[in-house]
Length: 140
Image 1 (cartoon, one colour):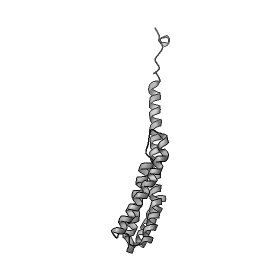
Image 2 (cartoon, rainbow, N blue to C red; image 1 turned 60 degrees about the vertical axis):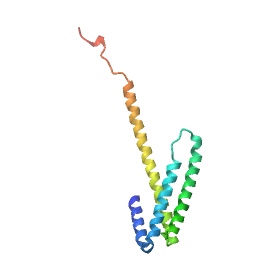
Image 3 (tube, rainbow, N blue to C red; image 1 turned 90 degrees about the horizontal axis):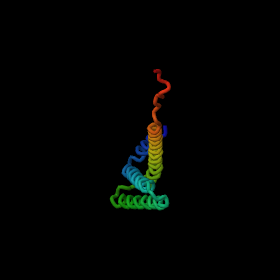
Image 4 (cartoon, helix red, strand yellow; image 1 turned 90 degrees about the vertical axis):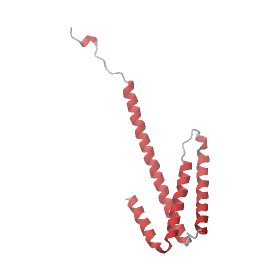
């Protein structure tokens, strides 16, 4: 249902911004790339938990750098011809792409947890010795 609502709102936004479609697409592209870079940097796995705050800050700075660079490029190339449409598109897709990346992360964590459960059950079954028939139960 949420996915259908996102597609519906995206389509309506694209149609309503038909005259300024380049600004709409620039907002989408810059938001997607900036959130992707921030996500990639901020959620890196590291052996040192002390680096978590540094990685979050690095992700935030990278997101800001990508956004500023993308806006400067869009204005220089005359792709962004309506700042209002661009800003609304950027805000909407910033929220949508962030939601998508966090849903992806949730799915990956669930899959990793299932794999860990399966591996633990396999190791437990391998460690248990098989029951051998005792000599006293055999008839002579």
